[in-house]
Structures are given as structure tokens and as C-alpha cells.
Amino acid sequence: MNVAVLGTGPVGQAIANRFVASGHAVRMGGRSLENERAQGGAAAHGPQASTADFAGAASFADLVVNCTSGTVSLDALRQAGEDNLANKILIDVANPLTSGGEATALSVCNTDSLAEQIQRAFPQTRVVKALNTMNNAVMGDPDRVPGDHNVFVCGNDDAAKSDVVELLRSFGWPAENIIDLGDITAARGTEMYLILWVRLCSILGTADFNIKIVQGDRALKNAGSRR
Ligand SMILES: NC(=O)c1ccc[n+]([C@@H]2O[C@H](COP(=O)([O-])OP(=O)(O)OC[C@H]3O[C@@H](n4cnc5c(N)ncnc54)[C@H](OP(=O)(O)O)[C@@H]3O)[C@@H](O)[C@H]2O)c1
Image (tube, rainbow, N blue to C red; front, top):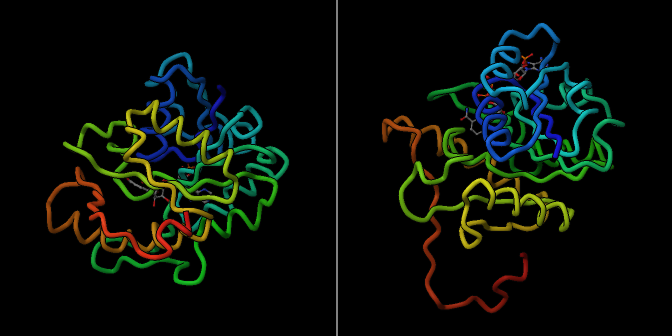
């Protein structure tokens, strides 16, 4: 499969690396063809990786991964081009963080989310929010955190979510640890978790941690009705 990784930061590099390791061809997209991080990253990922601007990467791809800064993702995706994104699965890994540390805040939250904004702006694109609730090193290497722990998917297109679940399984995520949260509005919760994630990272002194859902067996009356 041809994969566009939009964004050349640590997340883009980690995701590109994981797709190449799984045998896919990757084109990393940045703001310009001369992007040093993209060039260096592609070289490090070997002959299966190349670079382009956002549009060049998106047009090459069967599947697109948004690894741009969340506050500029809509801009970056517009540069990628609506036509180049149409009918394709877009895995949205981005978080709309406006700053870091104790001042961490989100540019959109509560009644909306970045993933919903992307889905509204690109209605022909099959947006699936996933992998945004953990450090980039864990995304494609879940064994980095010992034991069972969870990754979430959400989106409006069930077939797109199934394909993303298969991809996550190929990344090493056991099927039982992948939780489908329902439609794209669930991204509000996974994005807002980042406020807690940033605090935990600082308190624990490591980014190698993740969410583990532990549940009892007493079901609510309407249990599962939102999944
Ligand atoms: N760091 C993590 O472990 C982690 C974990 C989960 C989720 N996330 C989320 O994943 C995303 C990427 O994280 P990162 O740490 O790799 O980010 P980053 O280093 O900030 O990378 C940002 C990317 O956004 C692009 N960008 C910046 N300003 C832009 C603009 N004005 N217009 C268009 N594109 C612009 C950059 O393009 P150029 O290539 O042209 O410079 C770069 O490729 C973020 O949304 C982050 O919240 C991060």
C-alpha cells in the first residue's frame, strides 16, 4: 500500500518507520520539498520512503496519516488538496495542543474536536481518529509498555475503522486491546485526555505509559449502545 505521512516531526518519523517496516511504500509530506527533516527521515527509512510537499504525498497515497501540529492541521490538509484526500482513509493522530507543560491547552474541545473539524472540512475523506493518546514510540511498538493496554479508534465510516483496526493489529496491537469508541465525536474525549497525558508524563518522568481499561462484569442497562 502507498502511505502518505503528512508531518515530519517525531510522530511522522515514527509512523513512517512503522509503515516501512510493515512493507508499505511511504511518502512523507512537509511544507516544502526541501524540508530537511523529511529528507533526512526518508533517507533513514530506506528506498521504500520518499518525500514531497503535502499535495505530492497525498496524491501518491492510498492511505493518509495526519501527523501535523494540530493547530495547523486544517491548513496542512488544505495544502494536501481536497481532491487528493477524497475517498481515502485519513488516520488523524494529531492533537490540537496550543502549548506544552503546565500551560497545556487545546484550541478546540468540549463540543467539537480537531477530528470533527477535519471530517467536516473534507466530507469525502474517511477520517479515523487513532493513536493520539500515547507517545509516538508506543504507537507502532505497543510492547514498549508491558502488559495489556489500549488504543482507541473512532470515526463515521465503519469500513474505514475496520481497515485501521487491521493496520493496528499489524503494528502489534492485539485485537482485544483495540477499542472502537463509535463515531467521530468520540475524538473530543481522546483529544481532551491529552491534558492529563501531559501531566502524567511530567509526574511519571517517562512517556512510556498508556491507558489500560479494567472492567468489571456488571453491565449497565444500555451497555454497548454507543459502540
Ligand atoms: N509527540 C508525540 O509523541 C505525539 C503523540 C500523540 C500525538 N501527537 C500529535 O501528533 C502531531 C505531530 O506531532 P510531532 O511532535 O511530530 O509534531 P511537530 O514536530 O510539531 O511536527 C509538526 C508538523 O506540522 C507541520 N507544520 C507546522 N506548522 C505548519 C503550518 N503552519 N502549516 C502546515 N504545516 C505545518 C510541520 O511541517 P514541516 O514538515 O514543513 O516542518 C511538521 O511536519 C501533533 O498534532 C501532536 O499533537 C504527538
